[in-house]
Image (cartoon, rainbow, N blue to C red):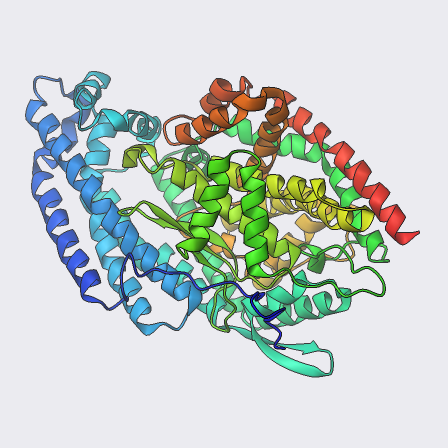
Length: 622
């Protein structure tokens, strides 16, 4: 029987996804047709932009009467953008999906390359409307929004206006958009291509295997502590050979952002943009990180217990996705993909039948990518296609319990998008912090459902292990990333950092958050973590901590609200694209996120889970 098989009908490896309902191939006629339609729409936008660009120097002095023609043109441009944006998004998503599965897909690489110019032109075409709506007086914006074609975009417009003081003149904003494609975005693409092409040699038993980074990372999902460490060191050894390239990329990306902060005005901070993008106040982020520090002893305790379960004194960086240790004299069997889907569907259905039906639909329609491949890029994500309003989930499924939780996490993202599919496009875009709510909520559902059906301590331990691992990840590892990125940006404002300086910064962050629970830091985490190289997103770390604690606080209210919980949960998800996060929490949970009370209460509610985990570890090691 092959490694990927566990029986006559069930296999460990996941299915490949089906993208054919969107495009048959990256070099297909359908792609060319959409590119042609897109070119026409952008040309129409550019033509109508003249009515706005002629007013750019005096937008703040306009009245409703003097801006009547411009208001009409702005509404028409909005309609064209609403038609063009889904095409841009779908083409980019399709190319990315193809390259995630096969990083050497030539047709997808070509499409992605062609899209760089298209995306730059589209961004420039939308800039005059953004500038107009940001700079005109309130009464002009009200007149623009007082129409059935634009009313739904009210929140998006009003939120955008909060940063109008940072806007550069129109010609400079369009220049920035043009230069970004061969600037900051090119560095992100370089990293993507590098991470998808690297291989490492890992000693597995009596043989040495040459594996892609994603496949080698899969070895760190197994219960063999020695193999996990071997795989981690092999992966880091490979990345260490490319630190100069990674340092060049991360320095360029951060340098670009810092330069833009300086250009946008005195006092513009590098955290202002990610806070605004996440629809959060800086005050909320500060409170979140401060309360996380209060939770460090609890999280370190969980990490120490995980190490103890493996019979070692400290937690290693290769233990981040380790499963519960194997029970002596037994072999941990991989969880077949179909069984994992069934477990998740059943768990989701415990909240509401429609959630379980959604998981089954995702599987039936093959909207999940779970295969193992040497050219696959590492990581997991949820994306979607805007024209069809359908989600897709990407991961490499190898049968570990951690894979089941990852799949549950990404399906949570997909469900979030699914319940919003009937809303206007302008109300379907939400900040990354709130985006982690449904995903982390989905993890918790699956873990608790698994615990309910567990038969004895031997079956409970793996579930409690996942809970403890989540606490360690979100309260120690995510703040480690945040601290590194913050310290890196502070240092980068003075000069580019050499690889050894980046290693030292990262090691210091690991040691500060993990403390004496850690066996050694991961000095190359800055090089091997994709999140630091996403050119369109900066500080993609605190949203995970936010989502974890926010979802845990939400989950704690499940029993309190009883039968009314699901309707409130669904309503909260649907509102995520049309409210600030603080207003969302106040409306649906009656809490103030800028104060520590909610966050502190949520962390305290997790202490009994660590107590229970300790009981199970003591039982298994005695």
